Amino acid sequence: MTSNAQANVAGDNVRLGITLVLISVVVFGIQDAVSKMLVQDYSPFQISMMRYWGFAAFSLILVMRQGPIGRAFSSRAPMLQILRGVLLVGDIWLFAMALQTVPLAELQAISLIYPLLVTLFAIPFLGEKVGPFRLGAVVVGFLGAMVIVRPGGLPLDAGALYAVLSCSFYAFYIVLTRKVGKLDTTATSMAYTGAVGLLMTSAVGIFHWSPMDWRGVGMVVVVASTTCLAHGLMIKALSLAPASVLQPFSYFSLPWAIFLSYVIFNHLIDPLSFVGAAVIAAAGLVVMARERLRGSVSVAAETPLPGKE
Image (cartoon, rainbow, N blue to C red; front, side, top):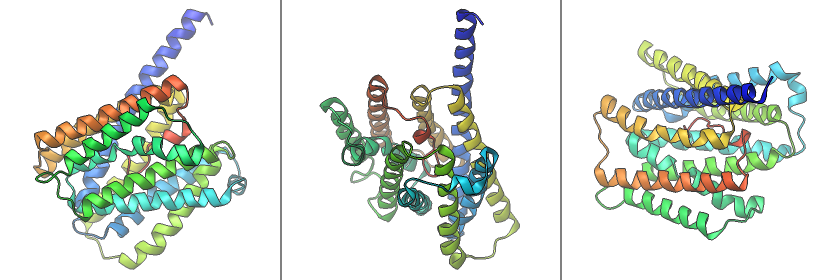
């Protein structure tokens, strides 16, 4: 194949990868909107459990396609892998509890601070050096979050706290994923994530179980299906283009969440909160751009997961 032909193929792959990311963002948004409706009537722990069933099944099926399941659990850092699974479950629980009270648009805006937290957590846990430019972007991003939860804006209640804690758990999960990525295969990381999450969410969720009507069952099916579909699209996208190229397009989740919040829940984000959300997004994009220049963006670690779409 000639160099021009190879360049055309690479360009086509990148364009397809971007398209798949945008579609996955749309699917993730629908999943969050349906989840928000569900947690108004059912326990967040029950919904998280049922949502995780789909994700865990999807993860374990992918692992088994790559080889024997037993081999995938052979890890050089099993405790870190277990901790990753615990953190992801904590993220999902906290996100589901935040969905009960925080409007979808504001919740998505707050969720965008997780790349900034990753930058901070990478300093002590990965030994990364972060210059004043990126640290400044992180500070600006947090100021944007403060605008959203200002007096007269989003109430500074348990829901807002759950949202921030959810981002913190997910950011720590990403940092550990980068760390174990140097020790274990992607299949091993997926196997531990799926197994630990399945056990934890089921062990807790079963005690919060309440009977569901057919409408609730149908909505759970939608959540589980969209979980698998969105992750499948994202994984395929990452096989076609670098994460550093695709990540900025995940910020389409903010205007999409604003649209869904208005159409489905009749809630429109106020102008000042929108400014705060735009500041967070801009700060996150700046951090990503600097990491791309430094060549430090991890591919596997940046795959969006439940709770951070």
